[in-house]
Length: 97
Image 1 (cartoon, rainbow, N blue to C red):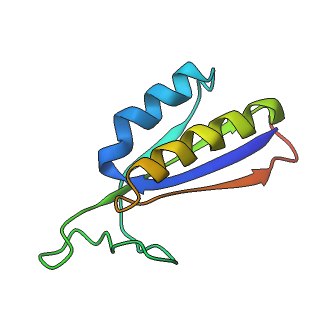
Image 2: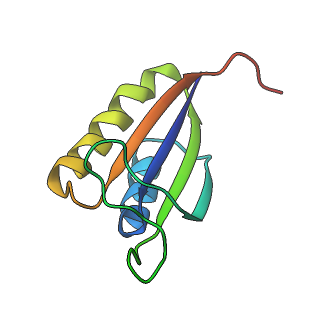
């Protein structure tokens, strides 16, 4: 099992949730308002007067076989609209209860 953490511009919210559903990734936890700045070329998402946009994040836990599909679909979204900002990180899940 893997954990996929996705940080993204709030404009992606509906598309990402729908993509997870279509990819049979039912469970997830979402944080609606997170602040941050990308490590490469991303615009800051501070919710301030100077940088008014905000980011969101989702973590989902999926079977190993679903990871590549989810990452490919996220990459397609990011390539289509690179200025918005979207990143995903994958971790191994050692145990669950």
